[in-house]
Amino acid sequence: MSAHPAAGSLRRFSIDALPREAWKNGGGWTRTVASREAEHLLNWRVSVADITAAGPFSRFDGLDRTAVMVRGAGLSLSGDAQAWRFDGPGSSAQFPGELSLRCDAPDVPTQLWNVMVQRGQAQAKLLIVEDDAVDLTPAPDVLVLVLRGRFELALPGADSLVLNAFDCLHLQGLTVMAHITPVGANSLLLVTTLS
Image (tube, rainbow, N blue to C red):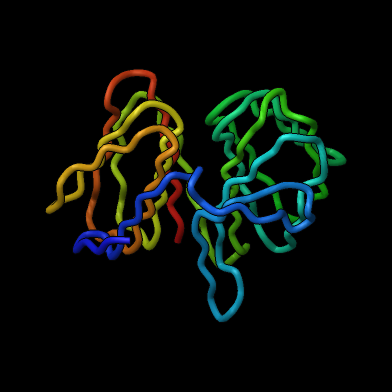
C-alpha cells in the first residue's frame, strides 16, 4: 500500500492474488477485498465469492448485500419469494442478509463481488460503467475493479495508472476528485464507494 496526498493510501492488486477462505457455511470459497470494523463490529465488508456448484448462501443478519457478477454466466439465486438471474459480468442483485437463499449450479465457474454493509451504520454505492469515463468523488473508501478491458486513473499530483482486467484499486481517504477513463473499446468497470 502506498501513500498519496490525495488518497490517504492507495493499494493496487489482482483479485486472483487474494488468499481464499471458506464461506461462513463452508459451502464455497471467498476472497476478502477490504473490510472495516467499528468498536469490534463489522461496519462493511467486500469480498469475491467463487461459485462452482449449487448450494445455500450464508445468512448475515443485520447486513444489506449487493452482489455483482465479476466472471461467469448463467447463475440463478433464489429464495422463498424472490429470484435473481446473473447473465454475465456486471449483472447484479440487492437483498437483505437475513434471506435464506440458494444458488443453482452456474453454467461456468463464476465469481461474485459481494458487498455487505451494517444496516443503518454504513452505506455502499455501486456504479457499473461501460465504455465511458467516470469521476471518483472524495470518500473514505473507494474500490475500483476492472471487469473487462483497460482503464487509466488520473489522480491530481500523481502519475497516471493503467488498470487491466481484474485489477482492483482501493483508495482510502480520497480527498480530491479523481478521473478514470477507458483505454480502448469493450470496457467494463465497477466502482464501489463506501461510507
